[in-house]
Length: 165
Image (tube, rainbow, N blue to C red):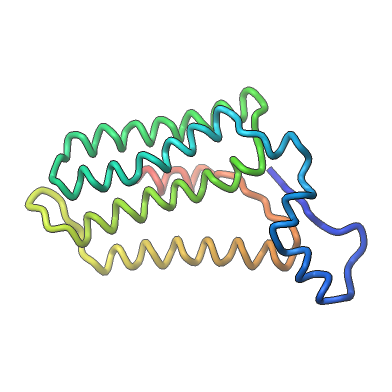
């Protein structure tokens, strides 16, 4: 889905460009892009489940953490499917969905790396590699948007596969 906020004419004034990259960008969105849909609510639910998953992992309730993680994965699948099938794609959903995924991924890896558990643990350096990768993706998206005034946010099979693995 492409969300373009390109001005009608190329601004030659840098102050004008600076003012355009602000929260006033949201005023340029049509009303139907600002609504909260079922897929957006599922994404928000996934964001709210993340601290619960981390709390379950910290307290060594691995069964609960696993069930909550499965619910998060199911909501991730459902929000994308519902948005595509029922035409409920929104700018808010397109922005929140990858952030919710990154929040869940980084939180779980952080917990596995720094909370001692006889059952599960990963090396700390692996967590930092994941954090670096996610940071590069976020910074890259911000740079692309600031240069091109639009960004295409679309899930790919490779991205979905690597998230599942």
